[in-house]
Image 1 (cartoon, helix red, strand yellow):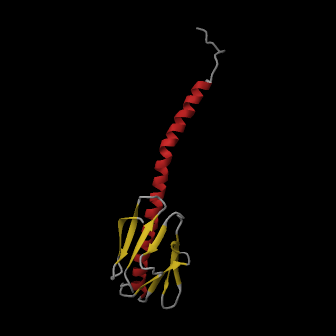
Image 2: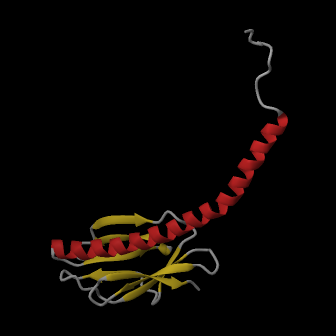
Length: 157
């Protein structure tokens, strides 16, 4: 049996174009879902970061038996915040946000919360965490008078 060594190997132009079209259709379907996924991830990450910072400040106040404060950055809560010892002013932690499309606003306009050594906070507050997607649900963080934060879904303005 003789093997033909002169056969051509490779893809025809039509086969190549079919593969390119299939990849294009798949990308067109997946890209909007990926954008929504990353936007939702930014929203949840910012909300979780603020809640964990509140819990950290509360626990740190009890641990060191002094007041601990959380201050919004100069640009507001959406740009990040700092945790520091309220008595000495010593910086404990700096938290920045990585998602520029996410906004975090406190309903009363508060830029500082202070946790006492007993874990209670100087004032309750409510944060609205939203992004630039129209009609999407955001997150609301409510801080009770006892200093405990709670997260829920809420409509964005």
